[in-house]
Length: 280
Image (tube, rainbow, N blue to C red; front, side):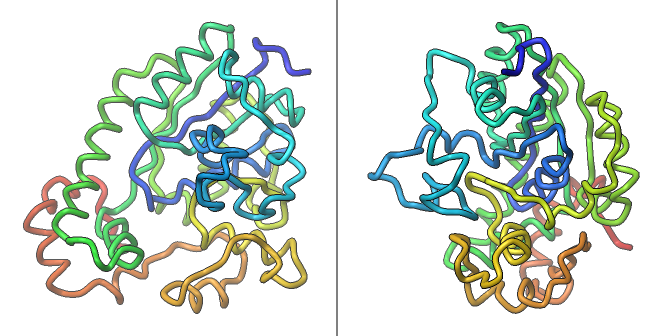
């Protein structure tokens, strides 16, 4: 059983569609770590009133060897229970909600465990394009302002966080993966393992998160990927179907994003995005 003083939890903040599932899977491919996905969804496990995508492992489904046998006792620290359940002392949680991170950090400190924080940023144009692709019925201006709001809250959280923390750009994670993984291991006082970069070769059991990245891992695990719980919609199928399984920089926004949406983004968020802008 993992002792509380040995427990380290990495919580990822930032905006959705910024690469947190990829980051979580890279970290979760370390032999001492486990990526649980969006930990907030642990509260839905076994709740048949919730849609399956919220209450089961996104890769295994109902029969997951990890989550089908787990019940969160809310009188105890969630991440400590997960660590004990799976026998690892480093847990990664990509819930991203500032209130969730504050509550779980306080919970961890109360038992002598160590919360860590990673702020993941990405060029806002890529994030907004991904959201428009997934939710084409939603107002683009609202999508842009929602992204800005999430990032502003994450910056406040990061500045006030008391504990080990690191800021990472998605683009660096994709282009300089080994360098970034080394820095993450240093923060966690872990030995770097090159197998971390082969994230799709590890068995992952994730709650919530990006279906595309999960599909890459499921494709390596299942001879027939259609047997995995995770599935792709028509807007993303071609990109991930032909994906090599390695870490790749996703710049689809450059060819997909409508000119009027780029102009709207520049008008509303161009100045704010300047420090996150990626032109390589």
